[in-house]
Structures are given as structure tokens and as C-alpha cells.
Image: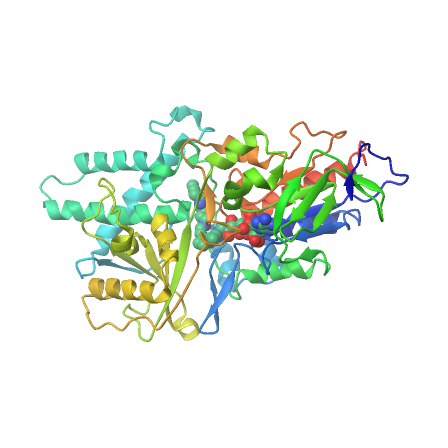
Amino acid sequence: MAAAAAERVPARRPRPRVLIVGAGLAGLAAAQRLLLRGSGRFADLRLLEATGRAGGRIRSGELRNQVVELGAHWIHGPSPENPVFRLASEHGLLDEAALAEENQKVEAAGLPPGPLACYSSRGSLLSLDLVASMWSLFSTLLEEACQFAPRLQEQGPPPVPSLGQYLKSRVAQAAAEEWPEEEAEAHLQLRLAVLNAFFKLECCVCGCHSLDQVALGPFGEYTMLPGRDCTFPNGYESLVNCIMASLPKGNLLFDKPVKTVRWGSSYLEEAPTGRCFRVQVECEDGEKFLADHVLITVPLGFLKEHQDTLFCPPLPSQKATAIRNLGFGTNNKVFLEFDEPFWKPDCQLIKVVWEDESPLAEPPTHLQAAWFQKISGFIVLHPPERYGHVLCGFIAGRESEFMETLSDAEVLTSLTQVFRRVTGNPHLNPPKSILRSKWHSEPYTRGSYSYVSVGSSGENIDALAQPLPEEASYSKPPQVLFAGEATHRTFYSTTHGALLSGWREADRLLQLYDSPHAML
Ligand code: 6YU
């Protein structure tokens, strides 16, 4: 194959050749749609996946022979508008409770799960009334923060750049104006400490290190769908497996990391087609593929690290800026299996409140000494007859990335100390096994999911989603297209955002070739 000087006009209109880079949900969804809806026109399609498996950030693992999720956990907003919910229902992947109509109608936005136990770092259980009242304040402030979305102009521009600054100013105001003056200093501090635990929870939700990194204006553009979040009884990967089963074998090439995408040129394939292609994709192993269109679905974390070498010519400035400015952070999970539970049988969530912390004070900075204080909470896997006594902790940000550098034994030692301290039981048995994710260390992911960071906006998301060349038209069709969760303006960071983005780009190509102007 060599770059051709001039383009040849083929005698017969050939099938377009499509390459999809990445076999996460976005890439798989795009492939499935092109193959199912393209009436055979898109049969010349291949997916190149860097790793040895499909699913990307959907990754189910095993603990005690039971399935646990190392990546995506819930269907957020399982209701008819959610395409992941629809697909999962169609394939019979959900249980009755998730399918119940009442479940689909719950306006659950941000509801913490049922019964919880909240431990203090001083070794006692905290009053759940206090926790509930601080949760009520925090969730009201989050709702308030959504009011600065660009579409809701009546609120005017955001008063401060970040979600964190806004929440902190409102917490300070509530403390000064609403909390009882006669209350003891220690109790006021406890309120702040409980609120700080919710700041950490929101860091996990946003996938950021600090809420000071999250842009306030666009925060309200993220859209929550109705429905109480549900899980896949046989693992999120059961959804991936259903899509995979519908794809012809041989279309998906594993262990094919793409190194360079050359676009905006012309490459002659001498045999067997004698055709000119607009794009050449080169893999790490040196193998080259020619295509009319390439759909890039790699995570934003990978793009941030490799955009300078991945594209030749380099990306136009709008897109390069979007990649630099949008946020991509880390949220990890730690599964811990205990011989005996130290929690009550109906408990669904365990939170730890570090009593000397406050959202209005600087957080601890010494990672080695205090990384575990960033854990936002532990959910209890239910039912125990199936899972045994297993907790799943969530931790976001730099502390989460630091945890990835520690050994399992080091993590177990620190967390055993935490549990002994908060339960006041110095003899509490350590967890007997541990399983955890390390999303920041994954070379083809480099974090967990995207957020709109200070200095970026929903327009950057749209710019990231735009195909290249920028002036694409029917006579100059798109060569490089972009999908993946980070390209969805209102559902970024979710599986449904990823799925919809894959469909969006598949539809772009389907329309292109359905059009009466269809070229090639
Ligand atoms: C959801 C949830 N959830 C927890 C954790 C994580 C994520 N998400 P992929 O990465 O899947 O695929 C790209 C492929 O490309 C991949 O296979 C690579 O290997 C490959 N690749 C890379 N480079 C390549 C190269 N050079 N060549 C070839 N191939 C290459 N989503 O709906 N529910 O509970 C969670 C959670 C720990 C890590 C999640 C959740 C996010 C989803 O997992 C994720 O969006 C999609 O799977 C991404 O699919 P994709 O195809 O785009 O990429 C306001 C506000 C805040 C907004 N946030 C609110 C929502 C909170 C989000 N969820 C939270 C939490 C959990 C627990």
C-alpha cells in the first residue's frame, strides 16, 4: 500500500470500509447498529481493540465465585428513556424488582441507598437524624447548583467558577444563618464533618479529585433519568455479551492497540480493491488498515495522554482544546470480604465520618498517611446468602490513584486499622480477601470517567463529538468520527451516554449512505 497521487474512480460503488477503534459499549453499539441497519452495506467493518477483551469500562469480576463489578455498577435511571435499560430488558438481563413499573418512576436522583450505618472516627455510631438532616441540606444545595445550567438563563451566570466553591459558600451561609447559635462548638464541627463525607461521595459521582475542579455552570446540563438505580444480576458484562453475540465473528480484533490515525490524505490499496482510502490506521504491532471512515471510541483519558501522537495531521485546535480542558478523573472500587459482618443484617451502606474534617477547611494532603480518609463509603453486597459478607468501598481522586500504587496487603492493613478504629473493636478480624480496580493505571483508559471541569463547558463536549474534517459535507464525507461517554453532552460518564454516542455516529454514517447525495 502506498499513498496515491490521484484518486481513482471505482467502476462500481463499493461498500464503505469502516474501522472502529475500541470495543467498549460505544464501539460495540456503533458496530451493531451499522451491521443491523445498514442492509449489508457496512459488512466491511472491523473493530480494533487494544486489550484482550470487549467491554472496556464495563468489567465484571469474581469474588467468592460471585459476580462483582469492577467498572460500571448501576443502570443510572432505569426507565424507558434509558437505552441501556431498554436493551437489558429486551434481553431479559434484569430482575423483577428492576423491571417493576414503580421502580421506573421513582425520582431517585441522588438518593442514598436504604438503611445505613454512619461511624465516626472517634469510634462510635453517629445519630442518623444528624446524617439525614445534613444529607437533606447537601442534596438541596446540589439541586440549587443545577440552576446555573446555560439553558436556565433566568438564574444569570454562575456566581463562582466551581461547584465546590458554590457548595462551600452555601454551607458557610447555612452554618451562620440556620444552625442554632447555642449549639456546642463540637456539634457544629460534627455537622461539617458529616457534610464533608457527602462532598467525598459527590467526588465519586463526578469522578473528580475535588468539587473545586467541577465547573458550576455546566453542572446542571448532566441529565438524570427517573428510576431507582439497578444492577445486572449476572453482571454488567451480560449486556456486552449480548451485543457481541450479534456481531459476526472475525469483525473484532483483540490486542490491536492503535498507535496512529492518519487522515486527510489518500492511500491506494493496490490489491484486492485498487481503491483509494482517506484514512490509514497503524497499530502498535505495525499492522496497517485502510478505511473510508474510522470511529474513535477510546476514553478521554487515553486521548489526553496520546492526542499529540495518535493523530496525523494533529487534531484541529477546537478539538485539541476540548480534550485538554474537559475533566477525566479516577473513581476506584475496593471489595472486601469478611468472615463475619460487623454491621447489622439490613445495613446497606456504611459511611465513615472523620470528625476533624470540614468542607470549609483544607483536606489532608499527606497521601501515605491519610489516603483512606477519602473513601466515600462502603456499600454492603446483598443478599449475604449469595455474596457472603462483602463491602464495596468507593474512592475518587488523587488518593484513589495513590491507592493503586499500594499492594493489596498494604491496603488491607490500612483498612483494617480504619475498621478497628471506627467500630472501637481493636480485635476486629481483618477482611479475608480483597479485589479492587486500578482504572488510572490501565494504559488504555487512564482514569474512570469524564466530567466538565472548570475552564470547560458543554460546548467542549460537542466539539469533541464533531467528526473530521471539520468542514465535512456530502461531497467531503467525515473521515474520523468520535464516540464514547465523554462525547455525550447530557449523559457523559454513563453507559447510556456511551451507547447513545455509538448509535449517534452509526446513524451519521447510515444517513450519509442513505442520502440521495451519497458518494463513493
Ligand atoms: C454507569 C455506573 N460507574 C464505575 C467505574 C468506572 C466507570 N461508569 P470504554 O472505555 O468502555 O471503551 C473504550 C475502549 O477503547 C476500551 O475497551 C479500550 O481498551 C479501547 N482502547 C483504548 N485505547 C485504544 C487504542 N489505542 N486502540 C484500540 N483500542 C483502544 N456508568 O452508567 N453506571 O454505575 C458507572 C462506573 C469504576 C470506571 C463507571 C458507570 C462509566 C461507564 O463505565 C462508562 O461511561 C462506559 O462504560 C464507557 O464506555 P465507552 O465505550 O465510552 O468507553 C453532574 C454530574 C456528574 C455526572 N456523573 C453522574 C453519573 C455517575 C457515573 N457513574 C458512576 C459510577 C459508577 C459506579
